Length: 250
Image (cartoon, rainbow, N blue to C red; front, side, top):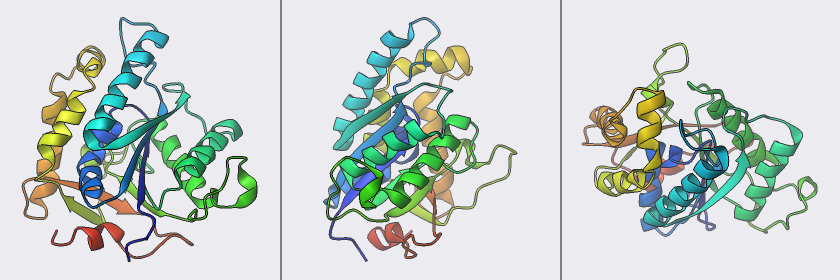
């Protein structure tokens, strides 16, 4: 089942989303020989109560690049604006062009329904781009011969519930008990977000909250820590559960 073209792309809204939602799985994929790409729609320009948009964006991009290095991946950014990510022609084209550059065979994105609209729009962008990026006429970026409809997985929404508070039932779990320390190290590279979350969200437990969620998901499969996903199985996406095949023994 494993594709010969082993390229994974995490396409999420903001710097630090990958480190919260799927970094443990990315670490396991890198260890298994996969090429890892971490992309965000925004540079996090809204992520400060004290710094201007350009200044905090530069800081957050540098943090995202550092975190990607810890995970063994390459960072990309579409430079859309926090809280204003749109599913419009220019942004869809940016997403398609990103997919053409990376040519992923495995994609992670946000849950279709999540607490923040940016997350939901990026989920749509990932779904749209993954479907069409292999078509020759959709982009001027050269098409790689391996391009095609990839495996697509939705990460847990924050809190593992949809915006109305309904629990999300995963299709797939990945045991990351052996990766949690490195995942925490990568999340810790986003140092600017501790002050932001404390000021805006009233949170001062950035890394602990991530670990606690992983422990709750891990308890469902009898391990210390896990990440959970819902596989997209619409036509013509692959139907087999690639992650379960790669990392059995949930």
